[in-house]
Length: 371
Image 1 (cartoon, helix red, strand yellow):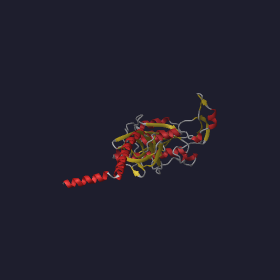
Image 2: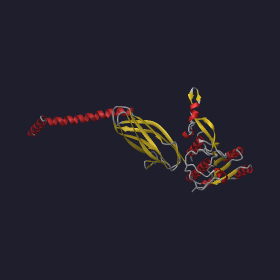
Image 3: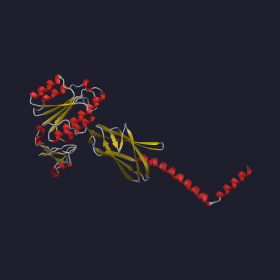
């Protein structure tokens, strides 16, 4: 045993006497020190890192693609490697080919040089109508968690391609060209110049008028204003009452989706022909017990109704009478075309519809059934 310790001592002595041993030891110690310092400075740099994100659009029709862009900025002199940014996507979306279940985690890996900004673009497919929201994103590094509160949202409208219903022929007199834009414009007749409003397309900006327009000592952006070559109104009513004949909740939800696709199709078609369109439904919203948006046109009005289509939930209260909404249709202009989407027409509905028809209004009943 004593001989063993003597040999071990001699071996250690020989190793300590060789410069290579000290070089290797210095390299190992230096490497460990660099790792320690890197981790320490990386935590500090992550605490100062800036993160933002945005969708390429605020609304799409179901089945269309859009993009989600993440932007990360490193305001420090310290380089950041292998930064794993996590966010959760709700079901109904497909992110980079991965179909999301209930809040599926997506991870982006960033390498960010000092004082630099990098970004990553995700391809998102909209599979289902809804109002989708993304709240937080986070970076977890060792025992440190950095949470970025960057809420963004996107509206997925119903699929507007619906083959089981169509507009009446008199609406189509104004033309047969269907616009492919999401927000249908109505550039038939030049009506005048007005102040620029959020949502106006840039091609309608009148730069000559803007140069001459001042308000409060500042130049004002002005736009050309257009009106339709044929003014007609189309009012769409969607009955969301859960009648006994609708059966189970799953069947009712399916009928609701079919009804919203039908309403969206009629809305887009009527706007593409230059008309003013309104929408009403007997379901509760954040602002009231029912929906009743009067006939108007323009980009902001179109956006409002499309977003309304996205927000309607099968769980919403349906306590308001559809007959009450139909009674208000008596005050509509006589030239208004009415589309009543419903799964059931009772005697009171039939009486109101007959009264509207006697007043000269065109009432089209669209039967709603589960597929």
